[in-house]
Image 1 (cartoon, rainbow, N blue to C red):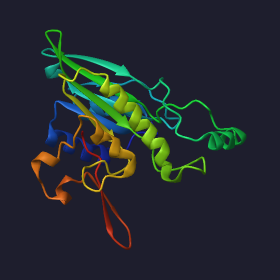
Image 2 (cartoon, rainbow, N blue to C red):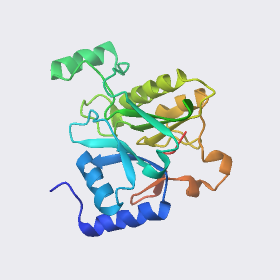
Image 3 (tube, rainbow, N blue to C red):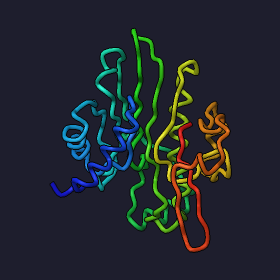
Length: 231
C-alpha cells in the first residue's frame, strides 16, 4: 500500500528496534496505523502487541504503544484515550470573534490525542505512561505565532490529567512535544511542567547538554538543540 515505507527504510527501522529491544515503545508520527501493524507483523515477527486508539489528526498521524508480548502474561495493560475531551480555549474573546468570522471551530481538543497506558500486576497499578504528540509550530489561524498558545493549552490539559492521579503511582509524560521541554532553556509553553511534581528524567544523569537532546535542527547560522524528553 502507498503509505508504507520502502523495504530498505523498514529494514533500517527494524535494525533500530532490534538494537534497542525495548519492552515498551511509545510512538508518535505513525503515518496510518495500518503501517504499524504491517511493520510489527513483517519486521518484528509480531513480537509486540499494538495499543492504539485513533486520534484527532485529519492526516492520519497517530500515536501508539508497542508492548512486547513476552511481558503481557506477567503484567496487565489498560489503555485509555483522551482525544475526545475538550481542552481550555487558548484564545482571547477578541481572537475568538476573529476565528469565528474565519470559520474555525469553537471546540478545542488535542491535536492528535493523549494515550494513557496503565501497567498493573496483581490488580495493583505500578506505572502510568502518558504518550502525547502536541501541536506543531504550524499556525493555521494567523493569530498564534508558532502555535505557542495552542501547544500550551494542550500541555496544560495533560498536566491536569496527571495531577488527578494518585501521587504514589509513578507517572511518565513522554512523546513529541514539538519544543524544548527540558530544564535547560525551557521554552515558555513548557514551564508549567516544573510547577507539578514532574521533572526532566535526563537531569539526574548529569550528562552534558548535547547528550540530553533528542532532536537536532541545523540552519545556516547555528545548530539548535531541541529536547523532547520524558518527564
